[in-house]
Amino acid sequence: GAGVSQSPSNKVTEKGKDVELRCDPISGHTALYWYRQSLGQGLEFLIYFQGNSAPDKSGLPSDRFSAERTGGSVSTLTIQRTQQEDSAVYLCASSPIGLARAQSKQFFGPGTRLTVL
Amino acid sequence: KQEVTQIPAALSVPEGENLVLNCSFTDSAIYNLQWFRQDPGKGLTSLLLIQSSQREQTSGRLNASLDKSSGRSTLYIAASQPGDSATYLCAVGGGGTSYGKLTFGQGTILTVHP
Image (tube, rainbow over all chains, first blue to last red; front, side, top):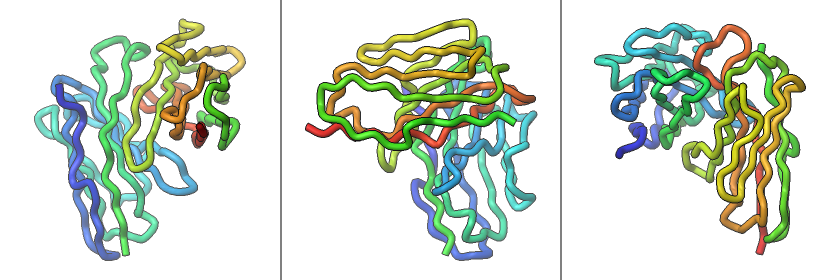
């Protein structure tokens, strides 16, 4: 079946503009995660969704970052007033967390490369 | 706060060698540990998942072990091939107050030359 998909694959924007990044998880996966991968910082957790609710937003770096998930499926990560330090690859993952979480792998999408000029 | 460290940061070996990648974590209250592979410009591919109650997992030429009490995991790659060249990431689930999130190490960049 289809894996996790993300769009766009690349996004170049100017400082101060808003951007939206989209994630389509694997069908039936109830858990969805956003991570950010930047040079020098490695891979960092941003936010976790279980269904449409977000019980863990602890990784969002500032209030310019927000995310939503609708219908227990597609998720959008929005960055307002982008800054150059927001440049990174944004990765989305999903998992069938209905299993005991110890057994539950996370499956990653290809990522969106964001460049803020 | 959970912290994950991977050693070495980079490794270059000739084809055919057996090799070991190391991962350590500071909080032993984990529920699983995953090893991933990342190719340049690509997403992550899950290689092995070890539940906290398990000691090791094997898949083909890969074997991963977990010593939860000492906060260590190793990924053993047998008979390495040029196609194994990639960045290998270790990630732990749990530790602290997180439920589902993974905490990643910085990765080991592996180059296998013919």
